[in-house]
Length: 239
Length: 239
Image 1 (cartoon, each protein chain N blue to C red):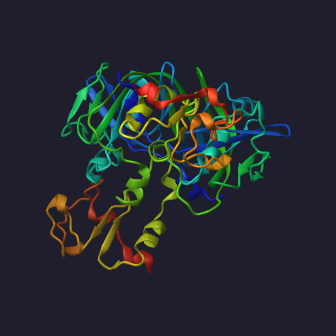
Image 2 (image 1 turned 30 degrees about the vertical axis):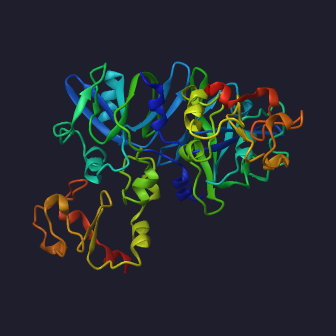
Image 3 (image 1 turned 180 degrees about the horizontal axis):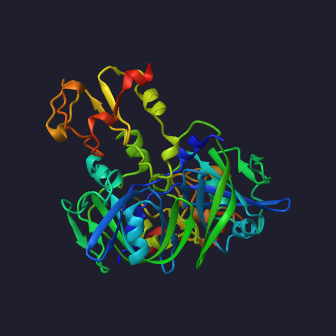
């Protein structure tokens, strides 16, 4: 059994939102498919330890925002690698409210779908929610972000709650980077972001040619927000 | 509500196979996702009126063959637009048997996944089967066929059992073809294949510059196999 074969399945990248009273939360999933054409329904798979899972279970409503191809990695990081238990993900996010009062994204999203849960299936670490679609609209013309593009072109990684998490490893990163200069690269153990001496970190105003050791002590991963201690020097792993 | 917004969901194209005793059958689906990483499980959605649905319900086993990017349309047509009630789809198909005795494709497939049903959810016209993955391997190196590529580049259509069927219509075909010469094009009402005077039909040895009316009376759609009466002249629809 070669679990990396499962990488050949095709996925998109979606932000699933829900609510608890006046509080909103959202997370990233790659597992969404339409189930029926008549009385259209949609299935999503959400990890049980996501706060969004609690919100959907209680409110029975959710929205799906389909991310656009050129969505910045830190935006994906906010929804995919940070927990709503620690931050308010909608505090600095443009959104509108759907019919049910659940938010949908107004930035980096090309389409939103709103659904009411009519059924759910317990699958161990995850639940598949079946939703009756009550609204769906396109927000702008753009191509959708696919998981393949996110993974291969943008260098994005799966969060620990993603079903595809097990197939990725530090090894994959090393293989990809082998032919390049590894000496000045550090990889985030949590989300796989690579800090590159030759590039710096635009988001935090770090210029190129800044060595990792010279980054401020309070510097954080621009994608998932963990500190410098969570980074590993690539040439150490690669040998 | 704009149901065509659902076209922005990302899908692959898969052949789902199952068995009843010594008889095999298979159909095309676009709805497959991995559900859990630990004890890996996979979800598929299959229309109830597919023969494959009967076979999976009875045998509780299925395989998923991930089609390669350049899979010929007639191959997709055999599995997606013809019924195992009328033909033996494996008669002229290269395949091997998995651990459970269910076939998986040995042509046009890059990966196979074999699973045992551990749960299922009734969703009206379709059933979502949850399978425990018991085997998965890559068969060759190639890119997977995505629904987007099948639809936009190859001009493929959804079968009437596909959840995405409702969003496509003759109108879409007309819009796409508007700027071209429609006069010598006929569209199959069943699968959307377009017979083009300028191209002919390689599969049946019909040379270019053969008018539709001059095709043999027993000529059949190279994708779904229906006769000439099921074709509509495009310029008549387009006005």
